[in-house]
Image 1 (cartoon, rainbow, N blue to C red):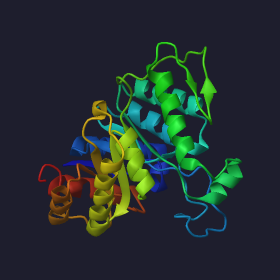
Image 2 (cartoon, rainbow, N blue to C red; image 1 turned 120 degrees about the horizontal axis):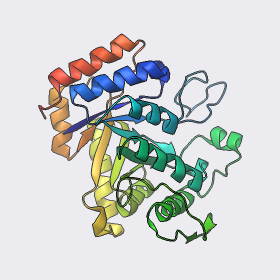
Image 3 (cartoon, one colour; image 1 turned 45 degrees about the vertical axis):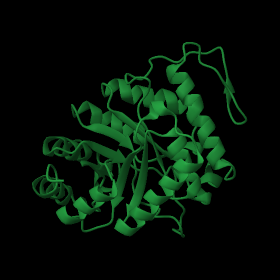
Image 4 (cartoon, helix red, strand yellow; image 1 turned 90 degrees about the vertical axis):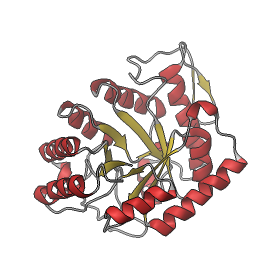
Length: 282
């Protein structure tokens, strides 16, 4: 079992020096990765299903991970997730390739299709066709990262006759993790992702999602070059060794807890406690 830490760009970690110290502590403690979240804007006032108050601070994922990369050596840097249909895919490909280069090949690209319509409205992004548009954007980014003469022609994005260097250090490209808890998200993960990410799931919800992924695997073909689908979960509160073992028994490869800490010290204590009680024991 691998362990990540969620929220390296938000809350107390929106202060860059705090983020650097927490990421360094996680690296020393044996965490394999730190992860960002994303909302470009938040509804004001907060209305369901918005998960956060409007004044909650979130640094841009690429900026935060580039800063953390400069202050760490080995820990992987995950976006958990970037809301892909809100982004220009070529701009995002450049940003993430840059993170992979400055981190010496440590990026994990986690993506999702988004669910907050007020956020899309404020950005002037259509809220419909989010799934198909996301897959086209992902394929366009892969073309830019991997093709000798990058070209892509789809419904939502089209280009040729261009180059964008440097390419990511990881070959063929950084691993792609696809989030979401719906049948369509499961199919996207099986067909296009190196991994799947489930957020805020207890054991029962995790089991249901894994069953959904198994059903998706019976309906869509997984390219053999993607290998085994790596399962990452942010569990609910109260994670302990017995619970971690139960997640592992379900087939989870990585747990990415989110400690809603109010202070840096509280978060550092959580990192150290996790190292003592969880890491290396599952």
